[in-house]
Image 1 (cartoon, rainbow, N blue to C red):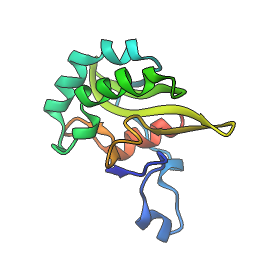
Image 2: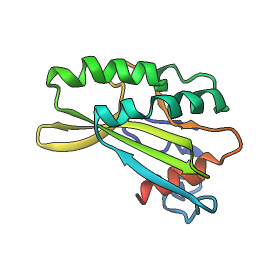
Image 3: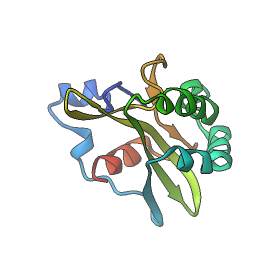
Image 4: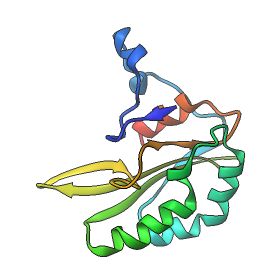
Length: 145
């Protein structure tokens, strides 16, 4: 499921129907949980798990969400004093990383924002989700995190 650059769920059909998917009650699978990674060191520590998730995703078009791309972004852009801090929502089921939403927290003109972690260099942003999992469940849970 594609997400917009401002980290809001792209939901034109839901909006046309007058409902907000992110606010609907959708539970995660039993035994699943979310966690938050807020540092370059935390992103680096996820390397092996993230690469396994890349191999398990239903969407092969995750160039700008690959661990290699995000690490390079973090090493260069965030390290150059751009006031950007990783804000990566990760989801686990049965101890395995099955969901990742790579965001970055920035402050512009005194306003804190969450944007796609590879912004402003990536062409798009998206979640990374293992095959067999419902994107709606994970994105909705993220909104309550």
